[in-house]
Length: 452
Image 1 (cartoon, rainbow, N blue to C red):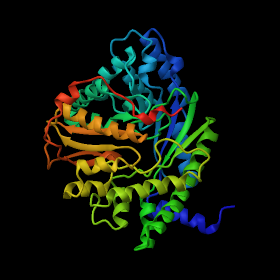
Image 2: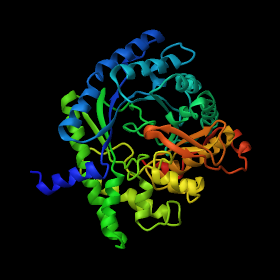
Image 3: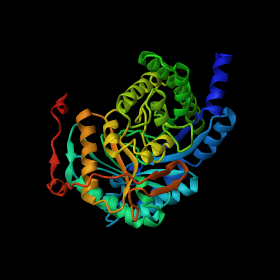
Image 4: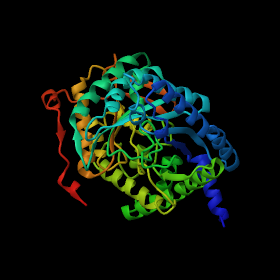
């Protein structure tokens, strides 16, 4: 039985503290759509996505109305397109991206992820073609998101892919320059990518997943901050316990929505990703949680320790609240999507180097960071390599989503609107790494990868 006070507390979380379900994401396998003829493959892909996701948006809206729980986005993730399109003889995969975009528009979802390649140990033909196609694909589509996994703890880091992705990001920025290089906001470079992530832009449907599955991503930074306001000056033991209890409550809401969506759509329930995902709205910020712990500004000394506590406590509290927890699960630190992070970057409290340190303990990595448009592709590759190394050595998922905004310099700003928000252009280390990046090859896996 639900206790009356628990119901009132949940209502307060939704109405006053910005609790929401960030996304219901339907994962769809496209492996059975592979065909030697690219046109036939695309026809199969479109038909399957539309058939499987026909009622996804409608179901999400019904759950919103019946339970009073905001569900911000309805999304789709698909099998990495490099795997499916690799069976064809097509010389580029932009047409596949357009097919995904058309299917997403037909069913009404906000984003569709999976224009992806997994190259942590090397390239297939499909991987090579897909990665070359990314800039044009993202320039020509609205809802398609792309990701490339360049490293893993088991395999090391594919530095040839790291070098190439620096160039791909630069070209994507150039092709979408008229929109503040927004194409780069839909492109993530991973190390240790997971197969069941419901969050964009990095979502794809892994080959170990069922034919179709429902994954849910929860949010709730405002709820955590409000809870911490009740324990000002308390020791960190109390802070951690408070976050754990709050994360449990937030995740229970996600479990409810996931179960309902699964039942109504007659699709297996996959996981709840219990990540705290911020928005540009005031009161919905990870940075403000860290500041509530006692920091003058996010980025001050102590920020990494505060984030480590938050990330760990969220996982400990949330894991007890759902039958299956997965995805990335923890705390996200995307600069442009977090009101507090934006302010900290503008005032100089938060630097790119400090953000890199924070990625050692957060859910993902360097996320939604705008940098000068004249940043070289080699410097971008160097940043990717550093972040991949953090993930590979620490056996965690890390990612890079950089936006080299064409025509913009430090002190300027990009503005994408919606959940993508806005961000000041952050400075990048001026010293070069070209000779390092040009070596190519593969950085070997760390010694602890030999667990068996």
